[in-house]
Every structure is written in C-alpha cells, then in structure tokens.
Length: 398
Length: 169
Image (cartoon, rainbow over all chains, first blue to last red):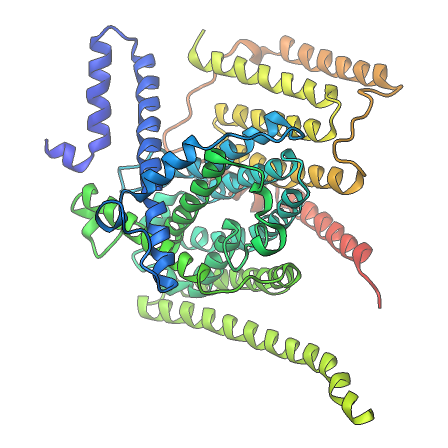
C-alpha cells in the first residue's frame, strides 16, 4: 500500500500483469495489453479534461468581455459543455461534393491526434508518465509537424478557396514560428544538459525562468503563434476569410478542430511550465507524493493556459506581413543571439556561487532584450520618418 | 516469429506500399501525402532500431519541412490544384531498371554478409544514443570536419537563396 502511494502506475501494472498471466496469457502479450490499457486510460482522461476546458474557455472569455458566460445548466454552467457536445453530435455531417473524401475526413483526426500524442511525454509526476523520451523537446516539434500537415490537408481537402487561403496563412505562421521555438527549446536543454522532460524538470532547482526570462517570453510568443490564436489568428480571421481552413467542417468534425485547439493551448501552457517554471516542482511538495505532484503540474498548466487566453482576448489580430517580418527580422535573430549569450554565460559562471550565476544569467537576458527592443525602436523610427515626411510637406506645397 | 519481427514486417509493407503509391497516384497532392506516409513509416523503423533521435528528426525535417514544401510547390506552381497527370513518362523502364538493380545489389550484399543471421546484442544499460551522437559531432576524432563542412555548405545555400530572392530597389 505504501508503494502504491509512491509509485502508483508501477504497482497497478504489476498487479494487472499478475492478473493477466494468471488467466493464462503469455507475459509478452499481457505487457502489450497493459500498455494499450495505459494509453486508453490516458486518452480518456485527457479527453474528459478537454470537455472541461470548453467550459473554462467560455467562462474566461465571458469574464474578459464583461459577461457572465454559461450559467443555466448545472452549478456555474458546468453541464453546458455536455450539451454543446450533444448538439455537435446530432448536427448533420456534411462532406462537400467536391471535397477529397479521404483527405477531408482524415484532417480533423490528425489535428486531434497531433495534440494527444504530446501527452505521451508529459511527466505529471516523477513516476506518472508514459515514456521518458531522451529527445522530449524535439518530440514537441515533431508533433507540431503533424499538426501542420492536418491544417494543409483540411485546407486543400475541402476544395474551398477561403479554406485554402486560411491554410496557406496558417502554414506560413506555423513554419516560421517553429524556428524561434526550436531555438528557445534549446535553452532549457542546454541548461539541464538533457532533452528529456523529466531531466529538465529535475535540473530546475532554480526555475529556468529566472535564468532565462527572455527565453521564456519568446517561447510563449512562438507557442501562441503555433496555436494559431490571437494575435496570430490570421489563419481563421473570421472577418476576412470567414473561418479559414475549417470553414467546410460541420458537427463533430468541426468539434475535433475546436477541441483540439483548446487542448493544444492547455498542453502548450503545460509545456511552458515544464520548460521554464519547474513543471511539477513546487517548494519540495512534489517529493511528498506523486498524487500531490500531478495536481501541481495541472494547476500550473491551467495558469499557462489562462495567460494564453489573456493574450488572446486582449490583443488585436496582426497583419500577416507584419507577423512574418516580426518573426524573421526580430524574434529569430533575438532567439539565436540569446542562445549564444546563454551558452557563453552559462559556461563561464556555472561554477560560481548560485547568486552570482543567477544574477549574471538574468542580467544578460535583460541586456539582450533591451538591446533588441532599442534596435527595433530605432529601425521603426527610421522607417516611419521615411513615410511621414512627404505627408507633412503636402499641405505646405498646396 | 517475435512481436518485433511482426511489427517490422507490417511497417516495412506499409513503407513499400505507400512508396509505390507515391509513383502510382495520378494526383500530385495525393502523391505528396503518400510520401508523407512513406517517410513516417521510415521513422517507425528507426524507432524499432532504438534510434529515437533519428526518428524524431525524420518527422521534424522530412514531414514538417520537406513534405510541406513539396505540397506548397505543387499548390503554387499548378494552375489547378486538382491537376492530374500521366502516371509515367517515356523513361519509366529506366527507372524500374535502376530500382531493380539497386534492390538486387543491396539484397545480395545483405544476404551474403555474415551479419544477416545474427541477433542483435542487447544495448548496455544507461546507453544514451543522443549524447554519444552529440559528442561524435563535435569531437575531432569523429565527425567534426564533415559536420562543419555541411554547415558551411548550408550557410552558402542560405546566402544564395537570399541573393536570388533579394529585391534590389
């Protein structure tokens, strides 16, 4: 029983193994069956969480817009998402006649799957995780690649010009913002000396956000762009191209995109917390019991999700050329410079006292950030003076 | 037959099948999507070989960048994106011949090699392929020179691309 409190998954798996082999099953087959059961359990729990996220999102956006939000069904409107799902399920399932049937129907599944596979590597507690990949940080990018593919399949498969324009825009965002994201993911990797998420969390005796606040900020911006949320939501810009790549989808197929997006946002909130805010660590509480560590991570992920929502419902949509210029001319160079500075300062001061190490790391980040902002300010002032001059002189000559 | 062999055979069949579909499908976009399936199956084979890093890099680079680039190129260069073309051109027999000869060559090398019937030795505990690979890439005794040459080559390609696309005012 005490072992169950310290390592619940192993105890459960051992018990099931004993049970299945007791029924006369080969040990190998039992092992595979238990792995399948584990995956099934994880996906079921994550999807249940996803239903709850619909309520969280609707309630939060309502508060940001000075409304109350769903409050008719159940206490605080908690039963509302179930009503939403029933509504989505009984809607007519439409496939446009010109659409490519297989590609069109595969896209929402891939979109959801690209988010669900991320949960395979999330360590909810030191011992509650599916697999501790030694390439965890890269796996995050690989799952993003599959999401990109889903967008392009949805845009092309529905045979609709707005869907295609939306997909094009979305892909432009996804492909470009992958670069600052990979670069900032290298910072925790470099500081921890491993790409495994458990290793990264264990290395955070000092949360990495103190060692690399700029890295955390750039990761958050790149993550929001990767999610296709405002201010980077020109892929679905409803006032220009109706709804972007998912315009032709109805019923639960649209629901898959919608639920996938919510879960993606929550998952990236979680990854942000794992990479820079100590994951399941919280003043040693995680060592008490894995049953305490998992809620800590989920609460932190919810906080990350809330920050992403806060940005979404506060900021306006950026024009696509501004967004691409912002990425390629500002975010990418800053991220690369920051990586080099971090590597240099880290290797110079890692053996110094903790206080000196944290102060130099923090200071170098602030210096890089301020320098980049000042350069950008002077550049835009020059650009503005070029544009503004003829406008000012026009009334004088007239 | 062990479970791993069964998985390998299924994945290998999927790889070959989708590779055939790449050349056989009339739709350019369908061919690109089948190519994605092929590349993904290759990534699965890498995982079966305990090369997790290569598998993830395969997905990131080949699916996330190159396949997407293919689809983009098709979308931007064709007038109608539902364009269908002929399945083969006049050189199809040459392609088939080269494919067959390559297969025969590889098969004979593997078949007559002494490693063909060996079972793999289990990996030592604590074997970390990623850090070994990282060390090998920057160690002067291993691959630092090819690595740097490849970096310079890629940088030159990058500069060239910028030069071609640069719009002089």
